[in-house]
Each structure stands twice: as C-alpha cells, then as structure tokens.
Figure 1 (tube, rainbow, N blue to C red):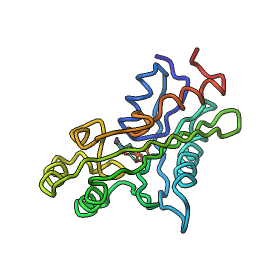
Figure 2: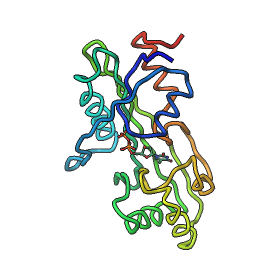
Figure 3: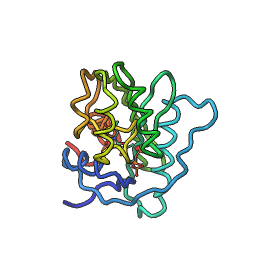
Figure 4: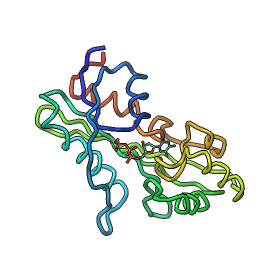
Length: 190
Ligand SMILES: Cc1cn([C@H]2C[C@H](O)[C@@H](COP(=O)(O)OP(=O)(O)OP(=O)(O)O)O2)c(=O)[nH]c1=O
C-alpha cells in the first residue's frame, strides 16, 4: 500500500486502526514533552498534544501529510495519562471502578501548511472492580502503556459496562473523525 500520510505515533493501536480503514501510511514517531500545563483543561490538552506530535515530525515528512493523536482518560476533571508505576496504575483503576469517566482523543492532521483538528469524547462506565481483579489485570502488564491504566480492546474490556461514543477513539484513533479529517483535506479516501 503506498503511503498517503505519515503517522506520527509509536502506538501499535494507532497503526492497527489506520490500517483498518485502508489508509496507506509510514510511521515516524514523535517524541514530545507530554506534561499538561497548569489548569489546562482536558480538551485543550489533548488537542495541543496531538498538534505538537504532528508538528514534531513535519520537517521529516518530505511534504507528506502528517496524522497524530492523543488520548487521555478524564475523571472529575483530572487528566489521567499513562501510569508511571504499578502503584499509580492501581490508584487509577481504583478511581475508575464502579462509575463513569470520559476518554478524549484528539486527532491532528497537518497538510498544506495548516493543522486540522477533531476531538472525540466517549463516556465509559466501569463495573465495580475488586482489588484482586485490579491487581490480576495489572499483573498482565497490559495497562502499562495505556492512558487511565486500561485497554478496552484487551482483558479490561470485561470491566466496561457501557460506552457512549467511539470505541476506536477509546483505543486511540477515532476512525470516523480521522476519515472526516482526511476527506476535508481531500486526501486519499473516497
Ligand atoms: C483508554 C485506552 C487507551 N489506550 C492507549 C491509546 C494510546 O496508545 C495510549 C495513550 O497514550 P498517548 O500518549 O495518547 O499515545 P502513545 O504514547 O501510546 O503513542 P504516541 O504518542 O506515539 O502516538 O493509551 C488503549 O490502547 N486502549 C484504551 O482503552
């Protein structure tokens, strides 16, 4: 498949999802500082991160459009990124147990000298999780590289009672929004 975009991401999920909609791409991973700014709200944060990831690889993209994304879990206004340790992962899942939270994923497309952005917001409701369930899940290592310390597409899928929004968005790349961005920019998709 010939490449029509550069995917500025080291996430295997984003690769898988972009492949799912038949977009040809090449990966150039972006390495940026992902710390939120003081008092930055979650929607602003994920959009800034997606934008910065895309811009970080533009000078290596040889004029090919660049796509990047950022996913965070939001609970009571707090932004949960990837856990820094097993202990912080345990604290995150304890917090998510038996209630609902939001997953926000922003997608940025750089093309023709400008950034286009879309934001996907999904409500996710978790069942009550026992500490044994949380520890058993964390011991698999699946949570280590995922925002909010879970992956809906893996073992943790059984914790999810209900979702309202975009499953692919929770996984890291909302496909409806991504396709819409490409279409708006008249890239590739029919
Ligand atoms: C909530 C959730 C997140 N995730 C993943 C998607 C993202 O890869 C990750 C959130 O971290 P991100 O910082 O958005 O992405 P990343 O560091 O993995 O990759 P890159 O910045 O190079 O693009 O969490 C899942 O795979 N499943 C889920 O259910």
